[in-house]
Amino acid sequence: MSATTPARSMTGRAYQDLRASLLDGRLRPNQRLVEMDLVSTLGVNRAAVREALARLEQEGLVERRPNRGVVVREISPEESRDVLDMRIALESMAVRWASARRTPDQAERLGRLLAEMAECCAARDVVAFADRQAQIHHLILDMAHAPPLAAVLRSLSAHVAQIRRRSLGSPHRLEDSLAEHRQIVSALLDADADRAAVLMAEHLETVRSLIDA
Image (cartoon, rainbow, N blue to C red; front, side, top):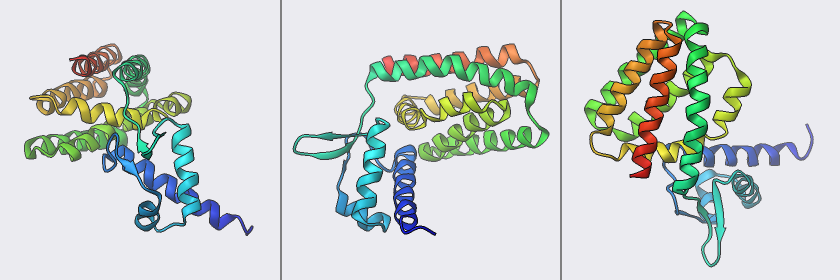
């Protein structure tokens, strides 16, 4: 084992933990990220935190501001629209392929996630609802069996998570989003590729309208 392996491992762990916190909303837009606080929270050294933050800055997930240091970057409405335009095109393609390439186990898991999403909606648990919604979209990507497509969409995960949290704050959005996902899943499981693609596009167009409102 090389002498640099532990340092690289520590940096990788810091990066993964910070990125996960960005995805699940524990780190909020414009929140200041203090190096020494992160050292304590993550259980790594300062060099690992700095390298992890530099990597996240390259990905556009955090930014450095004068007199504030590193903060969680807030995605602008214009950038949100661009991300949603990409998702409309790519996720419509993904769900079309998923409807033809799914396995029985994947279909069963999709049904379970949808049921959990309904439970979260009834409990008004927005955080858990957003998590199950994200898992459904990720599972559809797995069903599509298209690694290049999945790689592009997953590179947008942190941006998508911020957009999702913003849209779910709209009145009645949990119920509406649940209904939209039920329709998408139904078409996918019926192997109706054209309808599944149309419904996915309509769902994401609705999200865009909420962001623009």
